Image 1: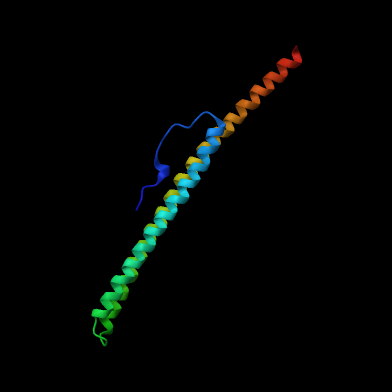
Image 2: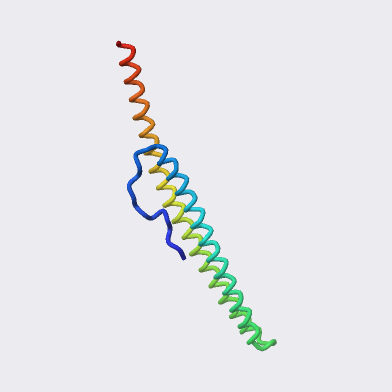
Length: 128
């Protein structure tokens, strides 16, 4: 499956407008990543289904044991794929959440700095 776009470590911009844009870009990349792994998961499930269908056609009609084995094998493969899909989603959500929190913290810090600057300017104007 694709690599998670939130794993890249880069310095955050200092400009709050750029931070807001980066915030949206991170969300967009996360959505694109989720769509790509969802598509890969669906494709894999279709492949497993097709392979199982082919194996069932190779089994004699009255061989119930062989059919059970095919279905069991299909179930195990699909269960493993689902587990891997859930894990990829969870890891991506965690990485994205951390990146968004980092951006938000920087935006909050920039907002506090702007507020401090405005307060200092207001105090300076009053003392004049």
